[in-house]
Image (cartoon, rainbow over all chains, first blue to last red; front, side, top):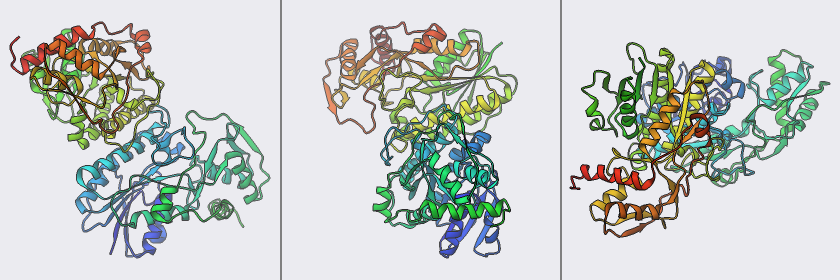
Length: 316
Length: 316
């Protein structure tokens, strides 16, 4: 039976990955420091005998008894608010965390998957971004604690592949949304939805013409799972995301419709180093994994709004 | 009295820095793992009571008793040959080494200087490179173990400055040459000089039109020293190097002249990700430090050739 360690398994993506792996019949060891992860995200799995939860910061070495077939690294503060609040922890998750998990994968002869990010492309100068693009990141900018940590994680993962022949997967994950995003994590969608549901003005930074491409979490997990179980050793990084590009102002309007909110939109100054545009080229994922997103934003937003209503204890 | 810890102090640049600091009246604690550093580089300092040598890999935490006024991080494999041979160690020096030394500087309330590199610019798309340029680095390329480790080191250094108000210096060091470079470290100048002195063909990669800018080590140390002792807290990264750009083929010819060698030049395929061009814009260093290189390549080459003759035990 596959035994999968999911670091960051109590986070947004990590917890959905735990659900999927359990539903596929795997045993899952979920490791989370709970700095930004939430035990509630996996509390429904705690009674399952195939599921184990360990509170541990992967920036510290970890030992696991028995076999592991796969080691997945989703552990990191991942929203701009979170990594502004935990800059050193974010950098340690990318370097120390990746190192410790690579060492574990090497010891267990397990497949290693690292959750990288579209942030490795920074403020991109090509559009959409293919995996061959080297990125445009300010190494000393405010966002560099996340961007450079993830670039480092990719470089270290490749080094382990080249040096130790480790089987690796580097997934460059673009913006993803859905249930279990945290209220107040600072990302556009949770912020808009919370504001709309609480009848507060929606905060748009800049003039709202900057674009994003939002992938619903079920689509993302499907892509990650296919990438994980794919035969073959090394493919280089693979983009996963939804190429359906939309400007932030339109997203705000869509959230107003999905929530039936009468809130107005309020404009704020654009933060430094905020990417102007971001859209995945998913040609490689399509070809390698036969994968593409299937859930459109209207559907995805409704499911996400439902979840935020529960969290905010707002009736249907 | 200033007490300076120099990590990587038995390496090429680190050992020259130790010399300079001792000559300025500082106490020096030289720390080196001796993976690529050489004890011989500092053996002449071992009898000085102000000089202490510790064999230690800064990728492991270190404790130092007493006061430190400055912590300098020069520890890393630094030539393409070295970091191809020690990819994981190189990545650890950049992340774990920087972290441990930043923690030490924070504990001691010391000024922290990190030896960064022109490699953070990768294969640059602007010419010459100013400090504002974000670079063009392949995060999963063969050179990424060095380039991404150094970008990470810069990001972590900035994070400590922002989070803990640590006084920091980020020096982006361009190609430097002089005595104590290692024979066989794979860099152009030591390779050319060794080949020329041994009457072997000089290996030029590609057609030799790729350019480099070589700074003599005494100039570099002067710049680093001025940067270190400068008043004021934070300047962002500062380029240090010699803007006198030359193509590799011309350098090979200059080496033939400086060595009176009859060797011929032999062309080899260009390695992957080799930067085509590299030239520092040193306007910021000039303005902040009143610094610029003073030793031209003809002088510098003669001094360097003399040193290689000693190493190779070739008479004058």
